[in-house]
Length: 308
Image (cartoon, rainbow, N blue to C red; front, side, top):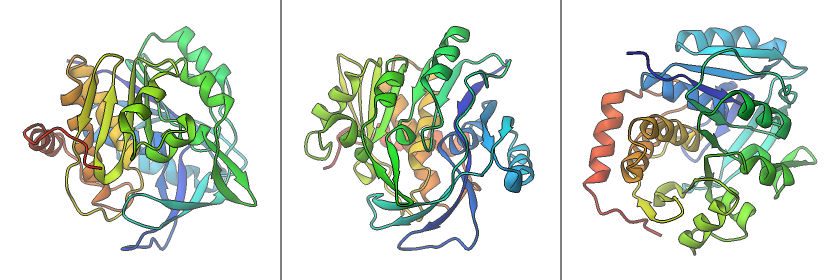
């Protein structure tokens, strides 16, 4: 059986990361689309990363992707994207400083591959509405939008989060919108810790079929226009929360392709996948399908409520 291919759009980055527990000594591969490809590939699904990288990191990127069985469709940018991430606490709150900015993706940067799922994972406004319109013309596949890079702007070399028209425009083309609590608050004006149902319903109001709000150690919440699905977290020690939302998105895509009518199962699987990521540093997280299934089963046997 040929498994569905996933296309992930968004520039890869090479980051420096500091948390209360660890600090990387060199820049490591990351980025929303990259981490999602890594997770989906380790779950057994073929993936293609579409994005831009500078000459300085291109060979290293291609080698790391190839080693993980990920295909790439790259263009060369003037710089390689990257952030210095400093985590303040265990809830994922952090500061971002710029190490490099890659160019926007050309609107015609679309592989010839068939695609059964598409991830839009911009890290700094590199995905345009024109590109998304072109994708929708070519593919009928579901689109999952992780809006992080559409809600960021630069001020004196630091990243600030602001609402943008680009997010509103692109969200209308998304099947699924998955946002963390900061992104949700920026996009909706509602604090999801205080009003999770109101926040996820407001996110749904941008035009998607399914809205997802992730809440770090408090789990996540899903809304499909008729029902609210609270998803518990998989309790673990978070060594490095970078990429948790990205791998949650990958887990969501994988299980949604398999069981689209059971969003509780989809959410628990996604939460289990993300928990493996946060236990590790960088792209070498030891995710397997067997372990993802085991953690999902643990969560499905637990009370399905978000702890706030």
